[in-house]
Image (tube, rainbow, N blue to C red; front, side, top):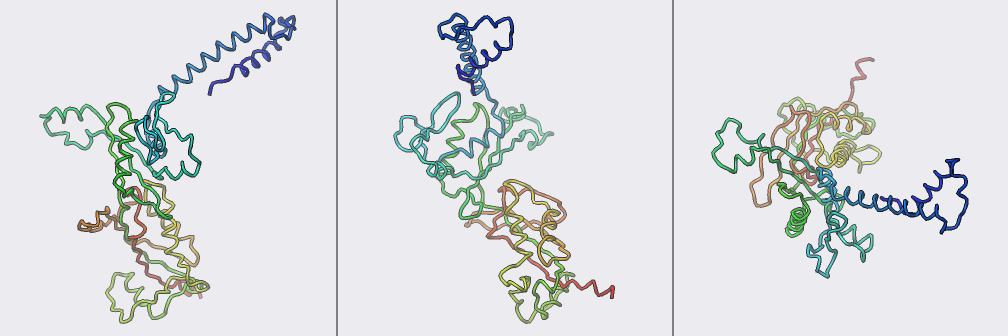
Length: 344
């Protein structure tokens, strides 16, 4: 932000005091010759700084982070027409498009910001085209000239969960907003998808003094952890895996959910990090992640996709940028940790 004329004048006067050759300039009248020259120079510097500041705003490079900032600053219900008298107006000011929120409270402004999570990336489409294929069409030549596409993933929050923007007009309005503010010639692709499906299988050795497990279920868990078939005549005790002192707390399941919720939007799911999080849970001795399956979410009317086994992959990024916690499946084999007996 440019300095004020008064601030510049004050700095000049301070510098004057450091120059012994100017000690004779003692007249403090605002109309004295030296004070008038200070004012003239300060005004010239101020005009220069204002010009530089405006040019900096206009010429600011639109990086991927710039697109993310603009997405998070989108206000739903804001007309794109500056002549509109309803809602916030998107206007050109100081070298960029901005929302005029003059008459709105902080709560109203925050409520209108429907984009709560955003991730922006860019690829060169040449990398996804067949490099050995002969170029015959102008369209193909166009993309082979290294024209990139900016990919924007967005999501909102419903309750305490990340969610896709499922109101059609909201996403349409956001796309119109980006189309208006983006750099000319840039290709922008915007998505807001349902969270990816995730299925986890775990063998967890637990402290039987801290975590409850029904004795009749132990053999079933042990055989299932070894991949062996075992007929369970009765259903498993629903309290298995809960704390003995508080049967409403399930340390392993809670640790898994907390870890997934804390993965940043469009961040990687890392198997080692998940195991580390479970290891810290109360009553857990040895957590072993045996299987990881995932699938892209589909529309309710579409046939659900079969999950893909990604156990051998150390980390991956969900297609939607996050996992759907409502469809999360965690299968845990609770096995009492009794290795200490070998030392007795």
